Image 1 (cartoon, rainbow, N blue to C red):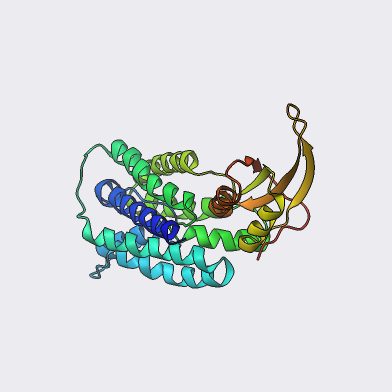
Image 2: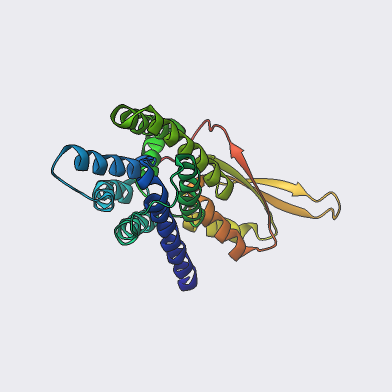
Length: 280
């Protein structure tokens, strides 16, 4: 358990570092705006510096904006997930202050693409290890649970506000290159983790009773048991079907590896759930 937590913290640190690196070396020097709460913090910092005598760093604003989000996550999403997510935010804020803002390339397209790849690599590995980079992920999870709707539309609305505001204040070209960044980062996150809000896992195991107890101890999800039979061996095995959110995928994978490393698991996209699905 201690080893797993140590590995998770190392991943969160690495993800935060990559996030800050992509921002300070590519996005901020080129005035290309990130997505979610990070994008809001970046835009606010730029607006305050350009139009008022007040200068507030992006790192400080990122931390400040995520405090109420962390409180919301603590109450509605889960303590472990929220703690690691806020740790990611705090480290990102720290690295944003430590790493100097330096323009690596004067080509704005290269900045958009490489910034997207580096930031998304940090976000992707953080998500893959059962945490998030905070902000919009937590807000979208809460809204999605209340409404039982996909997270995508909420992200789209907030990112659209950032893009339109950036375009209005700093020109349409900046907004268009921000779109390039968003497309690149989305594709990289999808490749590292998953873009699906809900997933269905089919688990074929000889240790069904142990698996059920372990899953119920960690995840509050219903499990449907299906009788299966191997076509080649003629052995009877239990098939467990469970629907989860993408943020629970890490925990489910760890449970399966610990209980039955030889279990066959098939994870597939779930486009919709009808009937009871735990939102709280």
